[in-house]
Length: 111
Length: 117
Image 1 (cartoon, chains in turn yellow, red):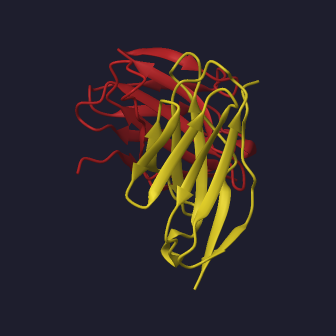
Image 2: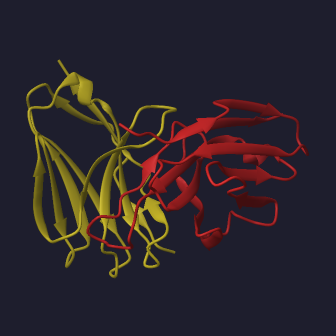
């Protein structure tokens, strides 16, 4: 069973702080990693993808990947109350056809 | 910006009835997927579809489920005889994909909420 693990939270950070969301995965052969955000009852919305070890920055968001340690993280700088949502980590299966999702981390940014 | 669309947004059905959920993929996308999310649980992969064939399916996707692309535009998920436990959000996702791990990205539709009574 290929697992993607996330702390369910809630993770509470004050406005303007850095929010750090973490994810570990069990399939060492995984190559593609994604962060989605999901508002309750709505569909996952892609934030960013990462495929290579290291950091990838997109605006206030930075994804970090460490394949040796099998973790991927998402940093949100200058967090805003509008960032409050559930953040889903997703990893492609070895076949490349299925996304395996974590249960998500609930983020609450307090004014 | 092109979007994946799904209909209906909400479907209520009686146990044992057949339902068909519809998805219109983004026009140049070649790979199509169905996922479901039971309330309070994680998003789960059901099936992937490419070139009019199933590429991969999960254990959830049993004989009660089928997919097809009947007219070259819509992508449908049929549940033949619904059960109470089929109540969930069903998401369609599509991907342009040349099977390049550096560019593959799935984009999700808004979902269909299926309620089985």
